[in-house]
Length: 314
Length: 216
Image 1: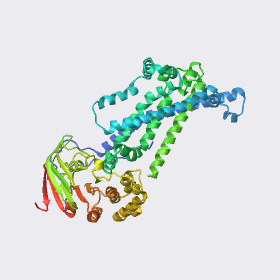
Image 2: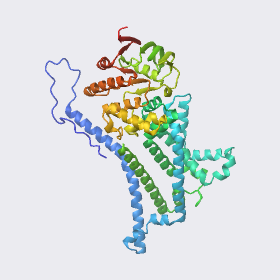
Image 3: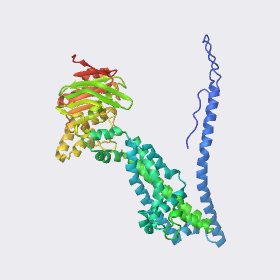
Image 4: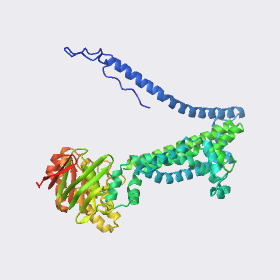
């Protein structure tokens, strides 16, 4: 954060006297010192108000880390091991050694990636159509796409479950509901809405002139899209993927209802946290949470790096 | 030849009614008018990016009024260049030929020819990022000319340039147009630019097009 309030010019100096012969001035001239003080208060207030949220975010993460460090050293003192053993014996390594957690990590990685890939594949055409074309019912469509974002997650899970009571979905319900595919579907149902929003914003920001030029050069719509628009949208696609991936990782409500929380089967990391909390193992729950935090951070950093690299090449 | 006959276009709330102009083959036509006078709308209609309510557009001997913009054979240079940020300058000059599946050797020859004509040989491997305003417009012009269009449409191509660059670009435009003999329609609000370039000069005012040069 580098939001230092700009120092006001001439603050503290006495207000200039109004020029002689000036026709009846409409009220008091603004004084430099007053404006200076006002500006300082304005920025101080905004920095404090905005900063509160940042403090909360960082505080949560620091608290997680502190809790785990404390538990690690508790283990050392109670079992009389050396300090160095903290590297191999801490809540995270204990969690990682657990077969069930290992399974949950793998399923999370695979399901989130699949759901993010499918989300982007749907979001690109959807975002393009909404951004570039005017058609009847566009506002309604826009509202429909907001449903997964505003609907309570549990309701989405329940609705998915009910949907699979009806044909044609019922015919494949046995292979989906409470099985691994349901995990991907539940994650996708919510994540895709975010991907669509991102892709629409991306296409909105790309000058439509470029496609116009491509069309006059002899391109069909598909060629203009593939050769001109898609390469320009690369960063947006990456952002949509990251966002969908992160949403999928955090998905829990729909999963609980639609996929169940069966260990070694439909258990993903968020389910693991829930299950560990349920049996009262807060230490393990925090450890798994921390693994999720790290996964999210790695994905964020990776995409930022790829994004900025790409930018540098241009 | 570019012939606009009794053209009416509806663009949102904006409306152009019953305008006509003709630029004979191989000539440089300039349509001059203030911002908001509808000159860009007319150009976009010629390009086929807007549909015609009434009237006719003829290029050469062909009525193109309802044709898809992709098959009209018009080179288009928009105001901001609208370069493709992920492509090199070479790719820009190559693009229309690649779409037409032109053989590699012909493409290469054409790219070199264009680069020399426009003085951008040294930029061929650069991406648009970091090119100056004048360089960008040269690339946009090269891209528009690459497939040897029968007509060239320029929409305020020099409005983002400083005065010196603008004068040099005017000379280049005039030179290139003479060398290629492409019939051109150039839209601008700048009187000086219009005077320098126009064989045929039109002014659009209050929805009416008036031919200024040569006096009819």
